[in-house]
Amino acid sequence: MEEISLRELIEIIIKGKWIIVAVTAVCIAIGIAVNAFVIKPVYVAQTTLMISSIKKSQIKEQVKSGDGDVNNFSSLIDDILQYPEMSVDNYREQVKNPVILEYIREEMDMKDVPLSSIASKITLNEIKDTDLITIKVTDENPETAAKIANLVGDRFAKLVCETNQKRTESTLEFIENQMKKEKENMEKLLGEYKSYLLQSRGPEEVKMELDAKLEKMTEYKTQLSQIKIDENATKASLDTAKNLINKTPQKLVTDSSLLTNPLLSAVIKEKTGISSEELASMKMSTEQINIIYVELSNIINELEIRLSNLEAQRINIEKVIQECQKEIENLQTEYAEKQQEYEILKKELDLSKEVYNAYQQKYKESMIMQSAETGRSSAVIVSEAIPPANPVAPKKALNVAVAGVVGVGISFAIIFIKEYLIRSKQ
Image (spheres, rainbow, N blue to C red):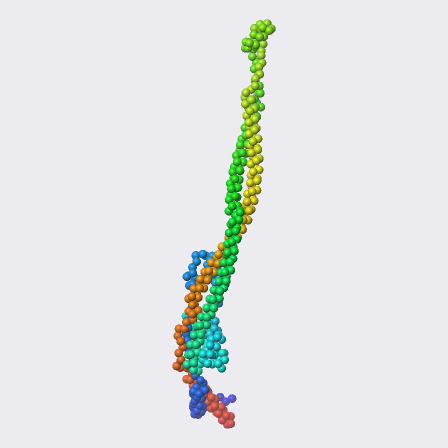
């Protein structure tokens, strides 16, 4: 294959310079003609809206409650009533809502234009790090583009308002129904609570009776302890007395001379004629009851009687303690049951009050949001669209430049093909 040097290439280009000029000029002329007569100019009109809303945290600052449980329930209700946050993607879809498109078609008298064609003209974008969004409308007529952009912005703001109003009204209706139900439930529980407190034996009464029984039981046990102490002491005293009486003679025997009793001696002498010497040798034994023995015997009798009484008291107090213990156990069971019933009923009533108060707080928040016309403040037109002076398309200079480049390329192809054919014949 024959190689072509750079010099030859330059010579070929120089020889075909008029072809290059002619073809390029024709392409540029075609580009200019297309820009002027074929491609229609496209204009973009833009309106800017500010998206803002009264936040729930701001409303809660106005409707504060010192009850932590109410705030907890309020947060729970917030979660139940939570609506999805409106993102830019959501707004982008909303701006092409059939309601808005139909409104545009009627206002612009575009009855023969399909909604999809109108939707293709509209784009929504977010301005980063701001609450602003832009609605752009493209059209061949700058006046039409500006008018459509303003109509879309106005109708979009109203649609956001209506949507938020419907949300608020729906929330209020739901809360009102729930408040009514909770109020009925609270009144029912309150009636049950009052009836429970008015019954013959409430938990407080049972508790007082139980405390009295426990106090009495303490007294009984104290008495029993004292009786046992006295009983042991009496037994010890009785054993000591018995030991002493066993060592003590019941009677005392005394030996003495008959002469020590003159009366008896005189009688014996008169009857028997015994002399005094003989009478002095005779002994007389006398017996008498031992007073100590008698006293010990009396003490033993008293101690035995006392011990019997103490034993009887101990047995009796033990029976009383057993009966009292059974009564205490029954009262403790009854008190536990009644206290549990009371606590369950009280807790249900308190819970119902907390839920009702939470709904009341939420109702106030919703009323404030409604009165503040949050829907109207959600989307505000910051700047209206004006008819654009210059079209965004076509890019005439770019199109002409592209046509020129294409012309140069075509002309190069022509002269190189021509040169190739000439050399092939040679």
